[in-house]
Amino acid sequence: MKLRLKFLNKDRQTKLFALIVTIIFNIKKYFYNCKVINYPKKSNCLFAMWHSRQCGVYGIPEREKLHCLISRSKDGDIIAKAAESLGIKTVRGSQRKGGTQASLEILDVLKAGNNVAITIDGPLGPKEVVKKGIVEIAKISGVPIVPLAWNNPTKGFIKLKTWDEFRFPLFCIKSCLLCGNPIYVDKDASDDDIEKIRKQIEDDLKMLHSEVNKNFYEYFNNSK
Image (cartoon, rainbow, N blue to C red; front, top):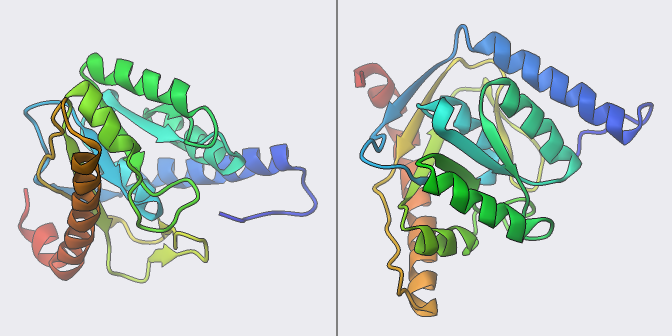
């Protein structure tokens, strides 16, 4: 996101935007209603979502078990501060900065029985192209990947002019979080297998987003 105020230095801008986002979400928690469909309950998992829909972590159940991978950028600082204020733990790093350390930390988090959410086309894209890192982590850990689609079709679910077309629930208080079927990666998976699974996650996410957009009101009104 390229939201900048010229009269403030970068550190103060980061703190200001983090405070604004934190206030918005802490107010919304009293009104926000997210219907979760097909949530996996048998084991911990790696949640895979598009970078544009990362606010969807707000609706994931079992928040005490949830950790989110967030980049070490200034924009990542904003998201991390907001997430932590809501009780969501963070792992900081990306392929460009701190990737190895972040991967080791994620493996420890998964080994402890917790869940990890990863924006699999972030932090800089290309948009909606899955990077193979999540597949490699699933291969080592034995933990399944669960694709997540999060949406609200109303105008209150605003789209920002960023590389990923970031979505933010500014006015809307209702949303749906649709979970795909778990995807397991064999510990002996070859490079070709990893590429096939990477593409499967990509296809599943596109299908899930199409489905939740088409059936939003049915999901929201009929789910428990």
